Length: 356
Image 1 (spheres, one colour):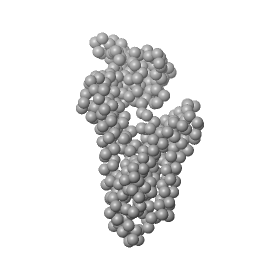
Image 2 (spheres, rainbow, N blue to C red):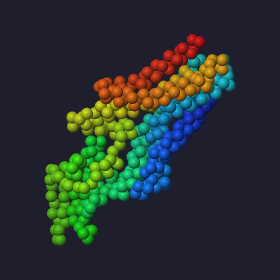
Image 3 (cartoon, rainbow, N blue to C red):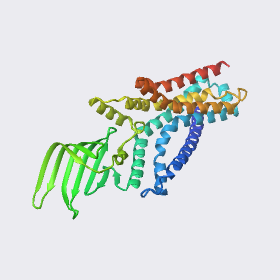
């Protein structure tokens, strides 16, 4: 039985990987079409566009893994059914419960992969991709491990991080004179970006260099006029759906401490926790749409309906997120309900199939 289990999981995993590669190729094709219009802006060329598209692949893989599990599971199980292998397996003692257990093991493998992608690889690569594009197009921006670097007039500015409410963290400014000699160095714990080209720096320490002395100043707050366009800083922003669970936890705490709304980020937080579970649910749904033998209905039609159901799940999560904000549905329910409903549907269809 262990040999049979390994064989089943190997077949299911290989088909899922093929399905994922096909979906990624499709998504990348649409990404390329979308990005072609930006080629020629600044130094954004074809090579950088391809680099941008490749760096977005981990985020796409994270989004598509549950759908790939469904499609791969459907194809693998349909192939086994068409070759009467499922019938032989049942005749050799593999019950439906054992088959479900194997499918849950298969789903667990991709659930772990989904969690790892969503927590570490996808957020980091998406951020780097956006940094690369913004740097190439604007020409004023340079990004790296030390945050965002900008040049504005005779100022060099470094911003370590920007929160979604446009609060800048760990801001440093160096001002040089006409001979490019350092004239002033300023550091601030944080800054608020205003809409009128002003930054409000907080806890400001300045060192002003004279001919033969250095004068230091400390101010709780300082307003600074700057001609920098606010949208140039958006390269530091990360969409809630692309943030890791740890980053979302930190930011939700920050918002609560400052008596601000957290619903959008709480929904994203719960969705992040539930999304890996969706991979296991999709494995069950794949079984529910698989005929147990060639006598049970049109395989092609069942495969089509199964894929349509997977696409419905893919978009249902976003729809529930939007509606929960409109109607004040608790974030936990908004995130859990789509996965729960599809799980119950899968169990119902499997039980119905067994009674036939």
